[in-house]
Structures are given as structure tokens and as C-alpha cells.
Image 1 (tube, rainbow, N blue to C red):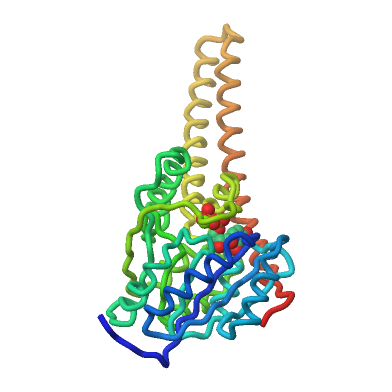
Image 2 (cartoon, rainbow, N blue to C red):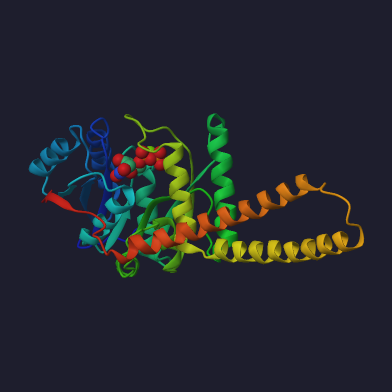
Amino acid sequence: MSIKDKSAVLSLVVPVHNEEATVNIFYDTLQNIKKELPVAINFYFIDDGSDDKTLSIVKSLNKKDESVHYLSFSRNFGKEAALYAGLQHADGDYVAVMDVDLQDPPELLPEMLSEVMAGPYDAVGTRRVDRRKTKIVRTWFSTRFYKWMNRVSQMHLVEGARDYRVMKRQMVDAILSLPENQRFSKGIFTWVGFHTKYIPFEDRDRVAGKSSWTFWNLTKYGIEGIVSFSTLPLTIVTFLGLFSFGLAVVAGIFIVARALIDNTSVAGWPSMATIILFIGGIQLLSLGVIGRYLSAVFLEVKRRPVYIIKEGR
Ligand code: UDP
Ligand code: MG
């Protein structure tokens, strides 16, 4: 495929948070990749409130290279916010989203772009396969999560899909037309539709620095994903409630009948305690689930900005 169109522009959105060790390596690597691309390229580094030298490194890149743009948040708003800001500002005909730590293989970029340019795809995404055996627990949870998510949300999330992707302008505009504050990009990318192809690649270590995600963060992220794209948990607790109510009615009739027929015992308090615990447990669980949705609504109606920019060029 050799579609050349030097007048077209590819914007590269790169969220960075405490990445002083990787930004320069990323930039240098991309300079080599750039030569293989049939289009011009510009960078949008989104500094997500780093408190190391990341911002000053990005600024010096901006000084020496006019294709480098940057935005800097007033604090850490999270990768989702950084992605959103990047997509809002990137003005290319094609937009790519990419991590700075080179875990998203830059050498795939030319192939991804030419695939999008040649059609019929509107986007080419990537999916990580064969995760190394060192992260068994994380991998297990992650696989479960994709299975679950697909089951509860009538939406097909591709397993191992990364945010790393190249999209046409039209798809980017569609993504930006979703006004929600709590953005779960993996879901949004799928929700907007369009024809997407996924290219698999081997998992690899980050080139330097360390990941800002903890297991707890990932769990919260997963719950947010489910809450923003599925109401099935609400349905489940409704049925749990109905079921335990039915059980309570049957048990009540049984207990009254037994007391009328054979009025001898005060025995049975263990079963009573069990029933109380059971119903109490279901109630707490249901309240918790409803609480998640309520908090999502609460955060959404405040209409707070997704991020606040402190400076940018
Ligand atoms: N990142 C960010 N804000 C955050 C955490 C991460 O902008 O609060 C960026 C980070 O600089 C990197 C990308 O998101 O470019 C992916 O982060 P990381 O490598 O830590 O995540 P992982 O590869 O473990 O999913
Ligand atoms: Mg990474």
C-alpha cells in the first residue's frame, strides 16, 4: 500500500504523567518512524499534572520542533481526561492515541495508518496478546473483566484492546460528541461504532520509568467502566430483592403455621439469625450497587470540566 498524501496530517495524542525518563526516548523513536509515514505528523503531549521534569522536557521539545504541541493540566486528572483533552485539541485528518512508554509499539504505526488511509476501516486499534506469566492475577482479572463487560453491556470490547489506535477525523468527532464527564474510552471507542480493525502485538515492558497504575486503580477503573456502560447490576439486585422477599413470605407462612400446630419450642434462633443476615446482606449489597449509579449521576450533574489547563502551546 503506497498511498502518499503529504498534505494530510496525523496528530499523535500522547498523555504523559511523571514520564521524565521516557519522553525523550519516545520522541527520538518517533523521529525515525516519521520517515516511513506518508503524511506529516504533529505531536500533542498532554501533561497530566506531572510533578517531575516531564513538563520542562516537553517544553524544550516544543521550542526546538514546531510540530510539538503541549497542554499542561493544573493537577493530575487521570489518563482519560488527558486523552479527551488531546482529542479535543488534535486537528489532524487522522488522529493516533499512544502511550509514551513505548509499550505501544511505534513500528506498527505506519501499517496502522496505511490501513486506515486505504479503507475500508475507519480506525485501526491494537490488542495485546500473550501477556507474560509474571502477572497471573492481573491477567486473570483482566480476562474476567472483558468477558463480563461484554456480557453485561451488549457492547463488544475486544480482549486486551489497548487505547493505542489510529482514527479518521469523522470518528474522532463522533467521540467528542459524547458529552459525559466520566469517560471510559475503551467503551466510548466501541460505542460510537465505525469499522475498526485490531492488530495484535506481543506484550512488552515499558522502556523506562514506572507505571502510575495500581491494582486498586485498575479495579476502580473497571467498576467505572461497568457503571458507565451497563445497568445490568441494577436489574440483578432488583431480582435478588424480589427473590429474598418471596423467600421471606414462604418462610413466614411456614413459621406461623408451625407455631399454630405445635406451640412448644423457642428453638430456631440460629435459622432466624441466618435469615436476618441473609436479607441484611442483600440489602447492603443492593444499596452499594445503587450507590455506584447514584454517585455516577451525582458526578455527572455537577457538569464540572473534565480537566483544567494551566498552560499550553
Ligand atoms: N498516564 C496519564 N495519567 C495518569 C496515568 C498515566 O496521563 O494518571 C499516562 C502515562 O504517562 C502513559 C499512559 O498514560 O503515557 C499509560 O500509563 P502507564 O504506562 O502507567 O499504564 P499501563 O501501561 O500500565 O497501562
Ligand atoms: Mg505503560
